[in-house]
Image 1 (cartoon, rainbow, N blue to C red):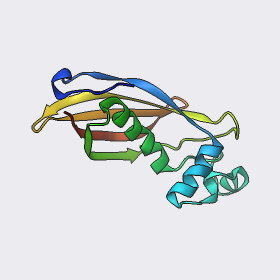
Image 2: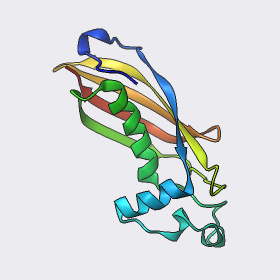
Image 3: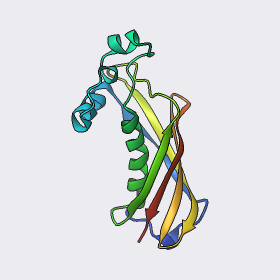
Image 4: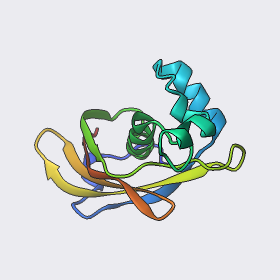
Length: 142
């Protein structure tokens, strides 16, 4: 997204352009291995539907990670994320094993803080539905 953002180059209101991150069943299976969360609802539609879900759903932490990815890609390698939090407001349903789904994440610098830090509000949507609320990161920029 960017080489490196500096504290002096951003202002409150600076927009972080939206990025659409693909979510496939394969990416969820890989995440199972990386996270150790092998809950069957994240890869088997028969089981997901049997427990009342519309289909396979992405891990909440996978969804959160995509929001974090937007921040780190935007801020660059010299930046440091010092705070990061979200609330999960809806599921990311992954109905097709091959085509998958998309999580669209965007952000906006809310305020500049002391110590070369900026507070960023994040928005994440899947299939037109907001999937994260109160998503916020604080990043120390060079």
